[in-house]
Image (cartoon, rainbow, N blue to C red):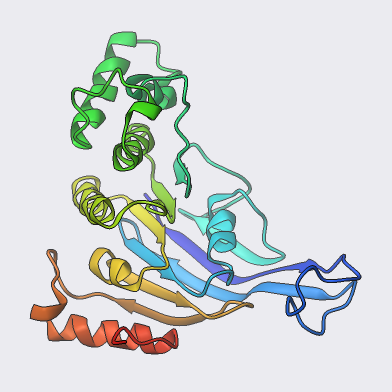
Length: 266
């Protein structure tokens, strides 16, 4: 199960600075004012969806996902996962952050086994870890340390560690940030293949419009802060997707670029 229901979600904080650090930051705000980040977000994400969230930098995408994952609390509104209120992080949900979270003193195998540390059967634990190392194509690198891996391999090791605990929901906050172009494309393929294999709910934050259109079952576009949902659309095209061969996909792509106020033809 990985059903998420967000109703009337709002998040604000109180301006505590008398002098702003940046001249145009929250223009017109004074000490004691409410500074809104999220404004009345209503979304339902069904079990097994791969949802990409787009929006301007600083609009509140990460704040939204942190609230849904239980790492932050809303100022108003409700968040339910599988019908239960979110009151904190859950072992059923895994968060993959922007930067590598692998423990540098542990090997790939040890990092992957970390989520299974409560298992009493050590042999079964090792077999399960190896299964997911195989899935992300890191066979032969089990005994390597993170510094011995490329950026893409580190990301794959993190995916294995996240998936080995069989999460109901996988949150991914710009997980490909900092990767080179070719590695990023390969990682997109890894996530798509993995999603089709495990059929778990994935919420994926990205600034890359094409990445969202290529990967997602559904694309959600946030406005600038305070964020509201500007666009929420399902992607009807099946994988593999090619903008040049799919006019409907290309039209949807144009809509997203327009909604975000940019144009890809420069």
